[in-house]
Image (cartoon, rainbow, N blue to C red):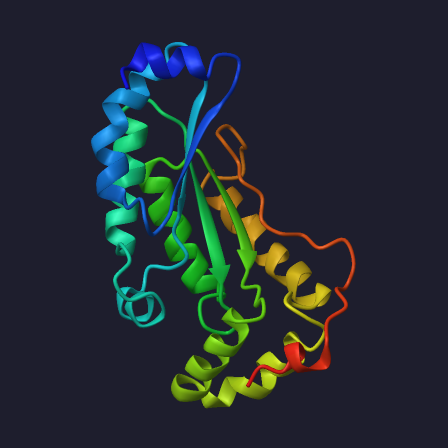
Length: 206
């Protein structure tokens, strides 16, 4: 489909793209010239998920998915093409990728490649993912299993106190790197209105 045809079908709308596993950085990078042409007629925004910089950890958690380096390069290319590109720092893994040092290093890289805005939120563990992650955690970081059981004792989402503590760390770091200004397409993370009710068997980490 040509740029003018896309623009005509999406007129008065925002064309937004989220880089996921099935549409990797190379696919979106290839389409950037087309998206730039479409942006002359309708708002276009991109969002890329970059949860961490540690490539070894990323490979263990998501084997076969694009590396952090490839995702950062996609953000850079999108910004060089004149397109807003937000970054979803998710999931933040409690006690694994949530330290001030780790987040500061990641935000520095995001600022360097020109991310339009950044939204960060903690890991949430729905049934299915919860069991898989529990097995992975027991095999790689067994010392964290009791802490995760406590943190996710009420359901798929972390306790409110953890979310608030993470926000207190993230806010100043975003300001430090000039990423607190919401200028691009922002995709907000999950924010449950109330603790979810779930069967007891779904509340077990292992």
